[in-house]
Length: 116
Length: 420
Image (cartoon, rainbow over all chains, first blue to last red; front, side):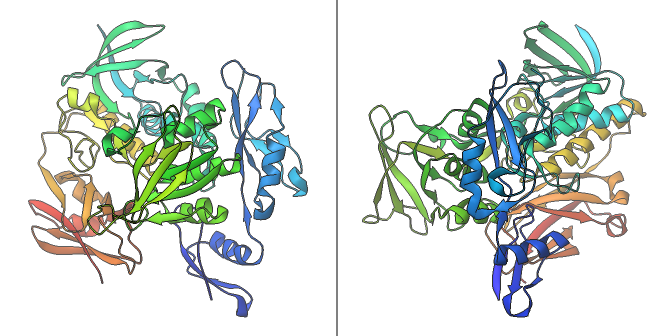
């Protein structure tokens, strides 16, 4: 039995994952915990958040995130690609900034709107 | 002097929710005063995700959460002055402020909501010996420099205090290429959320040194070295346990305190434990017509609850403005005892008993086996809540159900916790 703390939300449920019984998850208070518990043991993933450079007078950095969790093992490759991006405003919330980042299938998207 | 119905101080999550709630209830003239040049307060620099699961049912980053509210607020019939500093609030609700467009103004309000958030404890408040070089920052200031301004703040970093901002910044700086050598925590447990220990420290193999502290910071111009020592049960450094770390930056994540200068100036009674105003269940302070919400009242873990508290303050301010002012009501005190650090609200109105009451509390020490929280009316237990885990770093929220509360005629309530 593997003990985990669910990181899906700040509740932090204490999960137990049973690798001998098809990675059955207990201790979760919502369905996300079940998915997380299973994935965390088989192949852990994370949402990566960071910022990219923006050529704006007033807003020097644009916050971004991967639009879905990416394998934990490629987080630094994702950061390398994010650090190469320079954008011009306007940018709208949700706008793709990098598609298929680090070959993960995830896009990096803007998490705020910057008009100028 | 101009007049208005409602002045809200602060356009962070609490103030924005309060303004929208009051507007939705039909309050006519609402003025929001914000010190920064943007809406959303601290959410703008909290670029990590995990916000909004309770309030919106989805997981958002701080800026995304803020934009949900700011978009709505920008299109609502609410006046917002940015870059505007409130200088004082008087007990009769005259608000003195200054801004680049308005100049110096005094506005007389029928109701005021304090949504001023909190600030960080600094090195001066925890007295670390040593020299005074550059490179000692509070974690929130570092977060601002990195996430809003795009600065690199250091290359080899040690974090003192395991509050959530310190944990989040340990991860953030690691991802940006810095080396975080350790997070040092004086207490035998972390004050941060468990999930943050997991995803911010464990994911990156950053050591968490519990029952340790920094005993010296050295460096002439810039931080060069810190000494870390283990502490005994009385939190005194143990001689001979010292380790030196060569670092160029020290981040302090050693607690947050409600911004309460304006509240003090208005003569509002403060809770010595929370550092914020004593409030009733309708978020009204000891000064009639002045409400408070969000981190100005108690430092929250979750912005979702800040928004909910802001909305409650906005709703009740609207009640005061739109309905016949209720006759002066008796307030029943709600007191934390034993291993409960504090409880908010500290007072309950007689008339609220029939509606059920949401309360928030923290425990003084971790109860890893969980505990039973007991509510007493004049010393007699009336409600018990079982919790599987209790931790000072995680705020507990309880709903006192109306079925039980409406039966109560007590002069005071108290709350305590015991291991099961």
